[in-house]
Image (cartoon, rainbow, N blue to C red; front, side):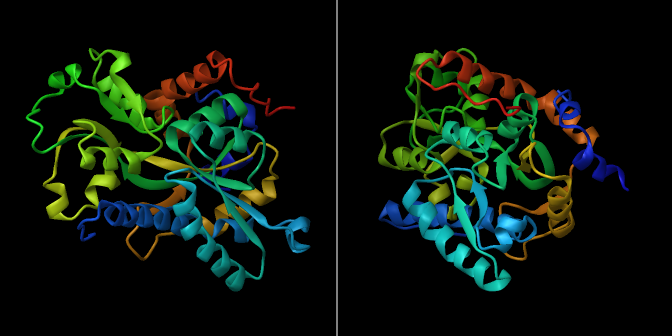
Length: 318
């Protein structure tokens, strides 16, 4: 057995120690196209997962449950997930259900409560699920994502320090973009940061002139046409790229994790996609990610511990 396979079979408690779009008005059409691309890319990397997560329930017709992180609003997610779900059923002969959540917080809770058989999860949230809930990483989804800090091109803002005096828009509070932006702007008062529903709504607000600056994941900007890029100025790009992870519950079987690995390892989408390739998880790289982004996992845990309005997050070991 190769080294990369060991992480599929290692005791879960060991893992916890690793501690061109052509844009034109109306803007709704512009941003709709962005989200179409993002969600299609996610599902391209996701489409084969359910095929290999088949047990006796699935053979009896119970749908394979696929989890997708909540990039956009439910209406657009459904509009693009439903055709993909139908295609999966026709190609594989198995029933599928694909779902997400209203926000990152609820998506994490859905994973912890085993709402999905397998899920595509952003890196920092994956580290939280691994460290605090013993989830099993199966494959890396190479995406080369970065955090971008944007301003309107005509804002007159040219340096990060100038942002301190303005209201600032971020996506979901638990999005990695939100964490990284606050680190990049250490002198900016926290009460000047505002949160929107998602990356789409951040771009929308900047186009509307509601905010002078905001942060998004790199594909949201990189996919713009030259004409639309000219409406923004990139003041900051995060120092390193980060990827996603395909995770499975600590209650999943070794056999099901091996099946996922066999079918998806090396998968490379043939069309334009955020996901470049799916590659094996290695202990060395997991250690790197915990050293680089593990503090975000701790911040997510602090969020759940300090938010008294939340129900207690379930214990994955129960």
